[in-house]
Length: 159
Image 1: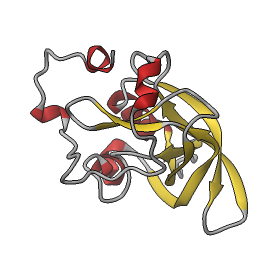
Image 2: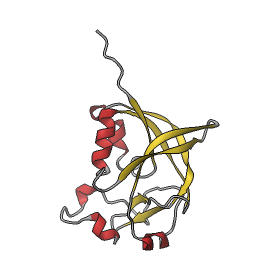
Image 3: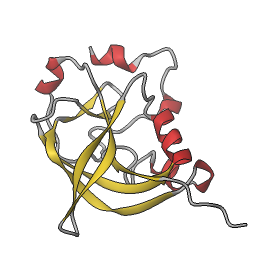
Image 4: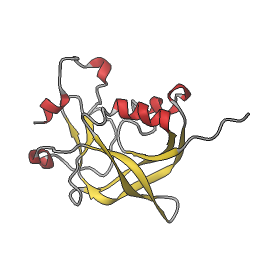
């Protein structure tokens, strides 16, 4: 008997999960579940996207209407992959996840996707450069968890 297809979820990624970034392999590893690239997109609403902490982590702040329309990628994932993404993003302890409208770049279409946001963030973070797109660079190289001291609380670094 054929396996019944699982429910699929659309997810918008804007940081280290994008193609070419450090955590993208999580999406391409079939052992983590199913993921299919649907295309590039941009948030319909404006949000502040910043690079924070000494580890140069991209954060999308829950301050709708501030910042810019954020560029990213849209994927369709199954429940197993969504759980892996939740683990990476430490949802719901650290990040929150909510549905937002995303304008697909190649099509005249708006779709609803899950995205991860940092809630209850200090206002001083809005003084950082507000980006429309994230790319790890030599100026701001992303430092993965495996290279960080496990005793460090990232949230404490944001205060």
